[in-house]
Length: 193
Image 1: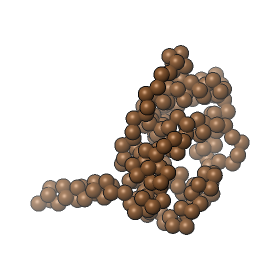
Image 2: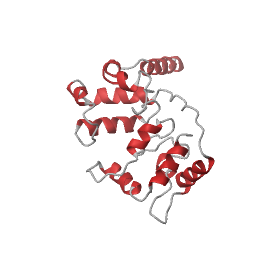
Image 3: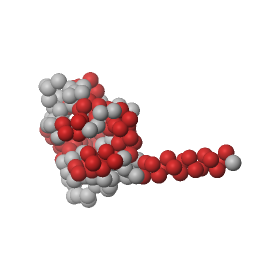
Image 4: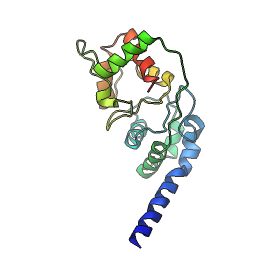
């Protein structure tokens, strides 16, 4: 009997995640897509860690992450942590659409792979995989890169001296050590993850 109860509870939980929260339909889907695989340069939310999505939403709500005002109207309706967590869990449970196939210069790809897996310690750039995972799956504090739109990643990989949340500041310091050719190579490699 306990096994049947557990199966029914798990089935109900997976059904709850399969149906998007009403606020995700109303507030997020127009840009990010119902399944979290919206068009470039909008970031894909599908498969992203729930904690990361919730953290980013919270930073936007507190004005600690600049989003160009894109989410301003959202905050009038998205005021509690439970709604943010429900949206984050829903999008984290979605499958990331495969990236479009592109022809990539093999030398650029090899350079990007080397930077991603080995870094450039001579200039203070650690290997990307130490935070973002070997396959770009992300980590506890670092976002998933696999399957993300190249245009969005290019936008996020611009070094800035503007105030940022602490986790973003660490990434900004790393970006400042990389040249444009390094960033181009990393973007080429990350497009294959």
